[in-house]
Structures are given as structure tokens and as C-alpha cells.
Length: 133
Image 1 (cartoon, rainbow, N blue to C red):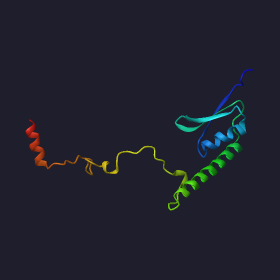
Image 2: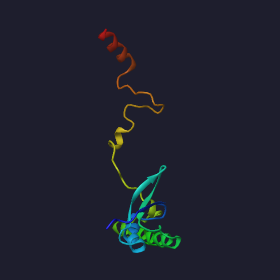
Image 3: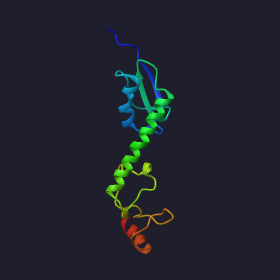
Image 4: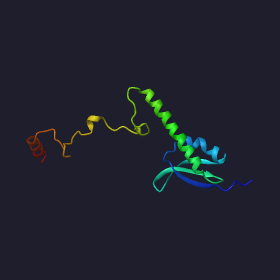
């Protein structure tokens, strides 16, 4: 039996949690429907592949509502881990991707105007340059 022709739809990721859309998509669109992260014209979103029509406005609203609940649960779990510091904006909690060199090395060798700071006095630099020639 030939597989049905698949339609592909893109929706923006705004207000949609990846885990929620992944869990809910087949409920709404059937077992053949798939979803994956996808960037279209520089905007992040989700690519939905399904043999039928895409999600309705009501289904997308339901996914957005469930996504908000998921984010609130995650924020509550994070705040329980560190109860003395409440999160003002739980959805915008920074996530460390990589850590650069130590704090002290950020400005080492630079003055406030961006020029290089020498560790030797000016006269000593002249003397050392003359001795190299």
C-alpha cells in the first residue's frame, strides 16, 4: 500500500513548548503526524508533517495553554531548588551555554580606553627596545 501524500506546515515557536507540541500533535492530527524544530526565514518554529490538514486555531490555543502550564511547573520546580531567590521572570531564566575565562582575565592588559597597559615603566620599555637593536 502506498503511503499517503504528506503536507508540511510551519508554525512559529512563540508560546509553544517543544515537549507539549510533541506530545499533543498525534492526538490532534493522527499517528502519522510528526513535528520537529525548524527555522523558516530566520524565525524559529516547528515543521509539522501530516497526511491531512494542519492544526486548527483552537488546537493551537490548547497547545499554547498547556505550554504555559508546563513552563509554570518548571519554574515552580526551579524555585523549590533555590527557595531563597524567587524568579521575577521564570520564563526568561538564563541558561549557561559556555563559560569564558575567569572573571579577572576579562580586563587584563587593557586600560579603560581600550589601550594596552604595560607592566614596565615607560623608561624601561625604551631601554629594552634599544638593547634589542
